[in-house]
Length: 403
Figure 1 (cartoon, rainbow, N blue to C red):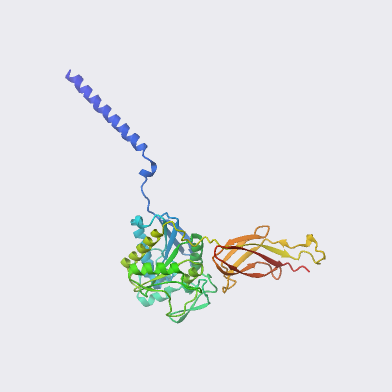
Figure 2: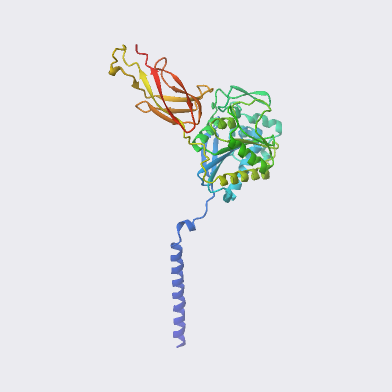
């Protein structure tokens, strides 16, 4: 009898364990996949370009919001190495604290916009520390890229081949965007269409607004004041210490994208607490904007048109022979902002086989230049004015040279 009871108890325990295992396993299998996934805070990494010497220019994007703001460090390379360290510190912070990014935002950090200049000073291809930095005099040459160009003078805002730094002449390149590092920033902006771009520099201990030729954008003043108030830096609407041409922030202003320059206090510190407060204030600012249509790109203005080639017959007849009418011309159209060199087009677009083209542009003055031959076809340049929220229609004509 006793033996029978023991057997019954043993079977009950085994059966209960089996049932419990089955229920737990079944429950686990029925948990929705999104509830059992481990959160991955790894940023999206993109290579947006390369330097003169072939070093990558990297962009890291955090968050999943539909609107983007971007932060750029190190455009002056090893001379302002602390701006790169600040960018890396910010990246580590976002990876550890992803919840601070508002749901409507994504945040892109380009930590080192002039990697050749950083390498010249630190000898490092990737991250570095303060221990890798020589004395301050040795860092000056790291300000420029490998072509000895000041990258923050190579953008299409009042560009000139020679600009100034502390009243000293510096090379601004052979044309606007002649340098691959500047091209990388340009392409990133046009592809990503950020709400705003913040550049970290040193060492003026202030936050500066940006402007090109049409004054400071109201939104630029808003984010300048927001960052300055939270960080404790002084807010300065206009940089007037010495003339500057071809700066990245000015180019952004020219295409209606707010940009500010945050100047760290020294060439050695990263002012972490100040800048963290400034960044958080910007996050709160854009969070309050919520779903308001604050984006600048893609544009809701532009131009559509056709390119024609003629004459197509050696003799013009009266009445006109329909077989000799101008023909659609499949070619390339360059869009050149008024005042910019033809070698530095704002945009380039291919026409279709019917000679038709369409491109969206920010408001402003432009020249439309169809590409012909040497000497024919000879294509005219047509000046146009793009108004806000309007798409204009234009026709371009190329002379075939047939007489």
